[in-house]
Every structure is written in structure tokens, then in C-alpha cells.
Amino acid sequence: MVIEPKLVEAGAIRRWSRQALQLLRRGFSAWAAITMLLCLWMFLGQRIPILDSTLALTAFFGGIVVAARIDRATGATFSDVLAALRERWRPIIGFAVTISCVGALIWMLLLARPGAPWWTPFYSDRHVIDVLSNDWFLASRQIFVFAAYALGLSYFGLNIPGVTSFFQFPLTAILGLPWREAQRLSAAGQIRNLAVMLGIGLLFVLLPVLIVLLLPPLVPLLYCYLAALSYVAFRDIFLGIAENQTAVPASVRSIRVGS
Image 1 (cartoon, helix red, strand yellow):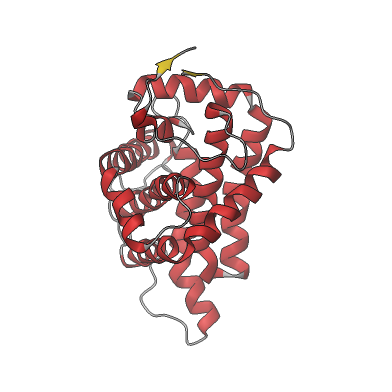
Image 2: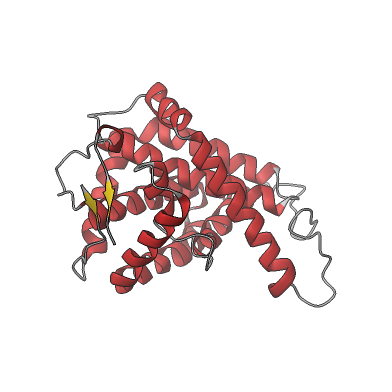
């Protein structure tokens, strides 16, 4: 099979959103429970920004792996979700740690305000919440605000020039391509579908802000949705699989990469 990014129609995001919601319904409970735990850990680790970014990326990448597993089955139990994560834990952790560390270096070298402590990505008391509000809505916003903003910023971490590209993770974790080859193919897919990819980027930026302001308890669900959306976009662009067709595991196929 030749892996080539294809050009999708202008309204692909609407179709991908529908497909992503279908995947969520098939494996929601276990998927959302694990994501909820990661979001709570982000709140507990609020003094360590690099930990929050690593957990956010881990939740997002893990969601892509779970979406791929659900896509190949009629349903997903808690053990199925754990099995999918266990099988792909190396690329999940590897990508999350690498992108978080590179992002911290970029902040320290290029984006930090003059006079800002160099260790801010590793420890910061700024905006730390020590006491939760007595109002449940405000308290939920305090808990999930770190996870929401980390998710919004993760889109930029997924597109660090020379390091990573948006579809690089599924190309590596699901199809087994080397890091650099996956980056090259991912960049080609993004350039070929620039308009819809900018639309996905807009969702990453706007939805976390809206959700944390209006319905903060739904932040974990947003992680699941954006991960599923990213998976079906990858599936469509690189595998050309129709909406109701089951994805075939890459491990059982012979893959030849084309430009």
C-alpha cells in the first residue's frame, strides 16, 4: 500500500466531526474516565507547567490511539482502552515528552518576557489555585482551566517547525513509520489540505476557551472529541477510508511509503 496524503473536500471538517462523535458514542465511558483522571492530575500539577503540557499531550495522543482501536471494533470496554494504551505507550510518552521539552526550550529562548525566570516552564506559582470556590461552577472552572488551556496550546506544540507535525504521531504510532518520514508525510498532508487544517487549528484554539467559560466539566470530553477528530482526519487524508469502513491494522499489512 502506498501512503500518500490526498486532497479532501472543503467541508471535510463537518463530516469528520460527525464521524468523531460516532466514535465517542462507541467507547465513551472508559475513554472519558481515563481522560478525566489526566485532567485532574493537571490540576494537581499546576505548579509544574511542563508536567501539565506533558499530561495534556499524553491525553490527546492516547485519545488518538483509543479512537483507532474503537474504529476497528464494535465497542470498547475499559480493558480494551487500557490494552490500546499499553500497546502504544512508547510513542505516546515519547512524543509528549519531546514536544513538551522542545516547547519549554522555545519559550525560554524566544518567547519569555525580559527578566522572567528561566525555570518558569518547570516551576511557577503564577495563577496557582490553592483554595477552590464554594460555587460548584466556579470550582469546576478552577479545576479544568489548566487542562483546557493546555489543550489549546497543544496545537502549536503539534506544529513545531523541524520537530513535529500534526499527523506525525498517528503515522508513527498507528502505521509504524519512522519519526522523520512521518513528519515529512504529515507536513505534505497539511500543506495539501491547508484550509481544513487551519479550521482544525481554530477549533483547538477556540473550543477550550468556550468550554472552560461555559461548561468546564466538559473539558475531558473535549479532549476525546479533538483526539477522535484528529484520528478520522488522519484516516481520511492518509488512508482514504470511507465513513463506514473499518480501518485495517497497519501491523498486518505491507506498507510502502510514497512521496
